[in-house]
Image: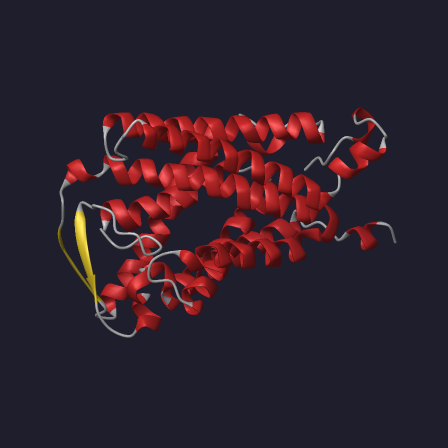
Length: 292
């Protein structure tokens, strides 16, 4: 994937500072957080309920604003084409990601059901799908743009794929420590399953679309279909899932994302993707090896 095009960036002390990896991460993260915060603030000031029609409009605005802000950041600061959001194969990769996310979470639930750790019953019905779907899309876009588009990608440019994977996965897990029902175990689980898998998807495709789709598909299936807690947050679902057994198996109050089953399922897929990426020359070495 193309990095910053140095030929199009002025060679001055200010621009060298702006191009420094940590500076770029701070600028991009702050810009995206500001945009999200402003839209949410305006929604709160207008007393718009998240699960209303106007709430859906706010959600769509957040998605569009985050993508637009990221594109603007890349073009203004990095001075390059935004290849990771290329529209080529965007629909195919987004759809494929959603399917993979649905299948992976359904497989996790199947294993838990076979182990006698979950009881699935009727929930809120099909009318409950809209809100979880919107929340899943918002999370997929916002978190993937920040975690993989900003943190992983920029760290990888300097320190290589493996260090970037470790750093971004650890950060992703740490950011979920503030969620309801979170524990050290749940944060480690999120880092290993989501942090590693979603970074592996990005490395494999070198675009964000499949990672966004997988993230959204997993969350939507977890909350919208099975009615399970999504990272500790309860959402209405078509079905209702009641978990019982050891927290290591069920994920406890955080939800099945903290289950050892989910971790193993996601790590297995991540391993396949990373091996394939390595065979296809998509693993980047750290800068000191590239200069050797």
